[in-house]
Image (cartoon, rainbow, N blue to C red; front, side, top):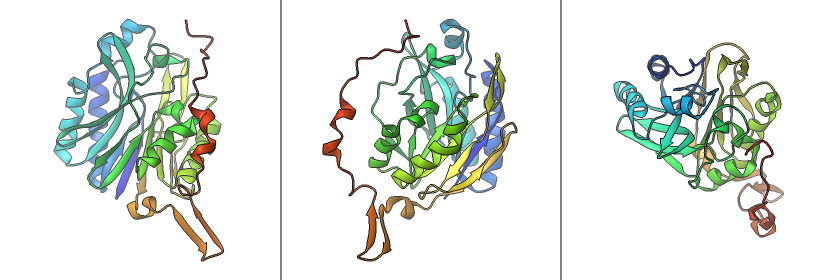
Length: 282
């Protein structure tokens, strides 16, 4: 199945304009055969908010007005989309990625790992377990931006059966190594397809570095975008390939299994609470 990643610029606070732009891209990617199109982190809303009130003014519930707009766009073309937005739940804001399709909202992921930057300074850390969702026969796992720096996030989705992990992101300067190395590593170590979709442009002095990337289950780069242009990447996902974790290179002499070779009993330190607090967070 073909999927697409749209590296695009985003207008801060201009939700209607961003949704219209995404709908136009969705028409193009679906015409090219994509069953799923992925947009950047906070593609519907922008990211560099000055304070909680400003972010709250463009936030929406899930489902809600923002997701309704993308559901209509998906219904018009018969395909699925993942996009970033600001989700409001009571008095809390979440940096969210939402999977929608012709029939409505399929799933919503709330960003677990929050850097001290932009919307993430104002958000509550994700409070739901990692989950894999179906877009037709494709099993989709969602992470967001900084999550890619934590191998446990992608591994959790792979163990839940993801064929592809999608990463809507807003990489600023300082994230060049993540773009160049981490995406390939997350794909390789989990034997999954991986699509990281960054944005371009500038918000309030922060420039976003583009460099969206698509990788196959061996960690090979299939497509890479520029650092400053709006572009569309395409990735052909072979679900049988993603679901096979047993690689036979020389029968009986050189075989590996990404899951069977794990030793979770040796990883107990990973689940111990660390008790640390980010020094910049009050």
